[in-house]
Image (cartoon, rainbow over all chains, first blue to last red):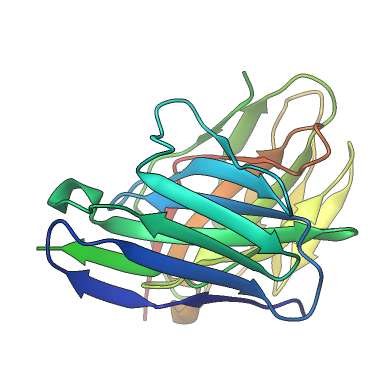
Length: 114
Length: 113
């Protein structure tokens, strides 16, 4: 089946640093990628939707200058958490969809900001 | 806007028990409906889906039927296993063409031997 690879799986860093998370679709062209945030024991909150070659569409309440999303190719999207602080600690999950492909999810990235 | 409501968990069952996790939805148009499963520390995996009324999605012994009249998509399994312990999410996709998913809050299933 379709595979989406997300990297890194876990990252721990100091407050104030920027962290980049990669999401790759390995065997199909992902025209659309989604970024979610999941709080402990909670559902997934959609942060933004990105279409290849276009600016991402952010959900209400999500700071686009804080969470930079790039979707420059049909197989790669990145989420950069800029100047991360402890409240940004969370589980971030990407998903990818394409023509005739439903959303396929990555395994998530656990981000811990000290 | 569109929304999904799931029963709160955790649902605790013994192995080989019958499972039902309720899911109802509110949507304009004709959404597709999904069940996803999340194992600890992992992302979501698509378990099954249904794209129109009366469709039944099934996979790994799980099944759910798209009921338009009751706006429901309940998940069932006749005999659960310990390995089924996970969090189950009901979701719908809107009709924008970009497959944006709206998730329920998730239901944790705990199966004991």
